[in-house]
Image (cartoon, rainbow, N blue to C red; front, side):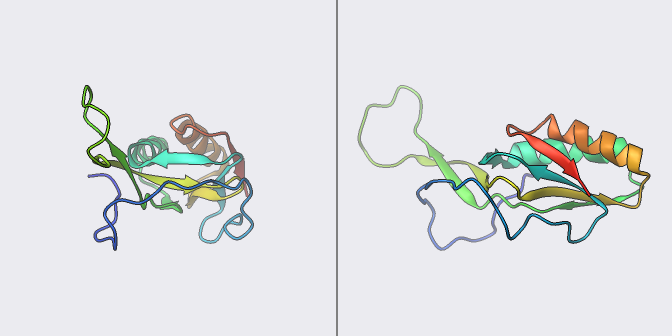
Length: 134
């Protein structure tokens, strides 16, 4: 199952706007190498899981991976071919708002060249520009 909140105060929320730069979560807190977002965007829970699997496959369960983002924003969708009106659609998936500069993934416990290769393969699964940093 993909990441999503267990319980929310409201079922449906508005998406809101994204500002571009992040200054709070732009450092490595747990690992040795990290994957940082260069542009702002929304990353779905499926994309986070796909990136996590790609990274885990490359490091072969030797190191440790931290996911530093969480999809907490519900995105709604109405059924195809339904007429206009009749309210907001039901929740279809969850996304994480990501600002430019925020850390997405961190890894440690593996050689640097393997970590860089793993993070590069994980970044290919994401819809935004990313950068590997230490």
